[in-house]
Image (cartoon, rainbow over the protein chains, first blue to last red):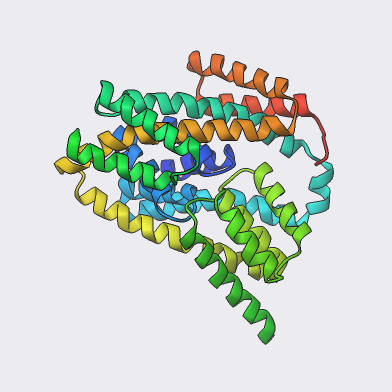
Amino acid sequence: MEHLLQLFLIFLKVNLLSTSGPASVGLLYHEVVGKFVTEGQFVQAVGFSSVLPGSDALQLAMYIGYAVGGIPGGLVALLASILPPTVIILGVTMILHRLRREAWISSFVEGLTPAISVLMLFTAWKIFEKGGSDGWEAWAIGLVSMAGMLSKRVPERIVIVIAGLIGVFFL
Amino acid sequence: MNRSRFMIWLRLLWMFLKVNLLSPSGPASIGLLYKEAVAKELMTETQFVEAVGFSNVLPGSEALKLAMFVGFAAGGIPGVFTALLGAILPPTLMMLLVSAVLQRFQHAGWIDGFVAGMSPAVAALIAVVAWELFRATSRKTTDRRAMLIAILSVVAFWLEIPSPLVLLGAGFLGVILYGQRSY
């Protein structure tokens, strides 16, 4: 019960302080790794949420919630992720004109974004560092993956799956 | 209940089930959603652009916010909930299945290998998304303010200030720096 409440508050916080699933990864890492899930489980959550179709934010919530407390855990994390945008948007659709004049929310998010990017870079480095294998293999996989994703020729999910398979057979 | 309104809700549900089964993430679903929502005249072009704009500036999952805006434009408050349902079901059910399978095999050797291989790629993915996110905002406004916030955040994370505090601080700095701009 205690766990579920903590889980709920964490996902509420994460979804109030980020604008999309991928952007929430940095903050989520700091909040759950070591406390609720292992480094390896977190990598699985991010990996599979980008491989499977549909919203990443909800899938991260589902995976981590399930790992912590089975199906009830998954549902609690899901609910906490859905609430902030739903409440805000229902508010916005009702008071749309008012919000337009009070644009401080957009300024808040605009200020938030560079900090989110920096946090994501720190997180990326931490995940890389603790990734289970160090040495040239990890660097090779990381650099080739990055090149593949930046080139826009290879879909991200294909890159992630191939990297995982290389891990199964060669690492 | 009005029959034609009921049809709209049904169409919304089906549309969001489809979009969320076919696109890998929130941002990637915009193109597909545009084709479905605007081409089939569930909402106007202007409404769609407005929805995407609002989704970017409000907190929370992007896919959900878009779904709710489109749902509201096409079918009012009940439309919001049908669109939401369509957007939530496919990704979470699939992830539930994957989670259940993965938890069962958590101690199998091949999972360790899979994670070891995936870690550098996931790290690369996060870095790439971070870069794209930063570029998308700084193009809209003056680079200097975004750079200032980025540099201050680097220092703050370096000093190991808790990340929610840093993000909140960055947000408030944004309010001060960017002010009451209309968009």
